[in-house]
Image: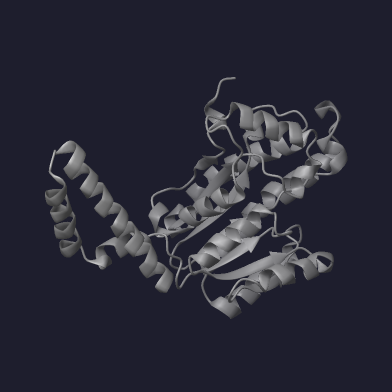
Length: 310
């Protein structure tokens, strides 16, 4: 509540400064009169009016589950942090016993967050997880799907040599899992909810070294649209975030990734690479009431790279 109050006060101060600037530079009021306008604004605008805006991004009283936290550099972890800071009660999954220790250390740093094991390629583990979530939380409000995988040999070399098994694994883990998780989560989203996933520009343009994962991401984006239509009547929204390249553990499997980062920073309108926190905050927006009218979309968080022709 204190953080919410402080944010409201800062927003109020910012609006006051805007009023002062308009009074001085646009309307030509003298300094004293401009200050008087600001004081009048402060007296007539209760903090509660500002809190209406701030509360639109609040996740207080909401339950969310995040899939794909691998380490502190993962996008899933940034999303978990943003949701937690906004007040969400979090369930965070890890894949197996091998990843349990690091996941536990991270999860323990978020107030009230709880760990759960789930391999999304196993229907039985998905069923068991959501049974646990129902018993523990009763209701879900948001789900973050931050999972993608393809065999290393199918991410490198010539796309023509993509193996049948590599193609199957990439689509099973990276795409079908979104369908399976949304299907399992839907009954728990009794009051509506938000499902988000992560994609990349390689879904629509050829990115050397991305290979079969680019095809899987294209399938994922189509799946987002079909799922949005399917669960829309239940007031469940489904969206994707297309983030610019970020140095994560998963990114190391992409050939010439450092060159990709350099090229992105040089050609993006903002002349830099996206920060992982910017992706986390965008996920918070899509999960919050502020995005209540947005579904079936792919939202780019890439410093504008996708708008460039060359």
